[in-house]
Length: 332
Image (tube, rainbow, N blue to C red; front, side):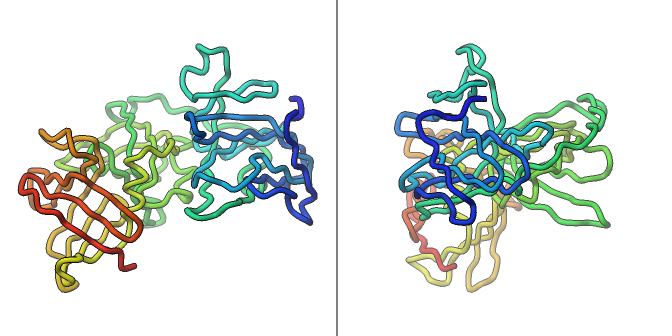
């Protein structure tokens, strides 16, 4: 690959990158080529390549950062990159590509990137390659064909959490209002648990596997692949809602959101629990969104809240169909 022509921004790791912005430092023993993806003024953009020698840094995006999330791809001969399955268009040569769809139809290749969370207010960020790239293993595990343990299943959802039970990792995610449980029991695919330690509650993910059992609002999955997907507006709104909130009209009332799980409280006592999702519509409502859809544990019907807004420390939504506005303030 050719060295990226229009900006290098190289610097020694000892002194760090010379220009503020998004920087990548190569703290491995081999040359790496890196590319980035991000949301620009006119949509998604992917750019590459920067060839970074060992003990060198490159500023891949100069100036104050305006996004929270950026995406990185790294390549090196004989090394494996811990991508998260997030796709952007790439070329073998120097590239600057607008759009992340129909890569093959436009004459581009398709690269797999990982997500960088630079923080809500950070103006610069440095990533070190040793954390995401390592010598490739000598062989790959055998592929498990879909359908061996149940109906083949694929879904986009939001990660919830993992626990360890009897020495096995057990995780769950929410997709289409269903909590999908999966565990590391020897049947899973090689990429099923590769990135779970990077996901936080509410992180957008894509899962592939075999649906072993479906219950009322839960399901059991034998997973083959689990990886991150790009953040949409609903995902960002869900993330902004995480934590503890207190009613601005009745200080005894509050709510607590952890991932997609919601507790409604009064005088610190839990009155109701359930799961939520953010959507452009809810039941027969399609105007006045985005909507919060609450599925209470003790109620078969979903409750809709419209005009969902998070503005700094304030959360507002309108209960439907009654129309009363619920106003909350963050307390954590």
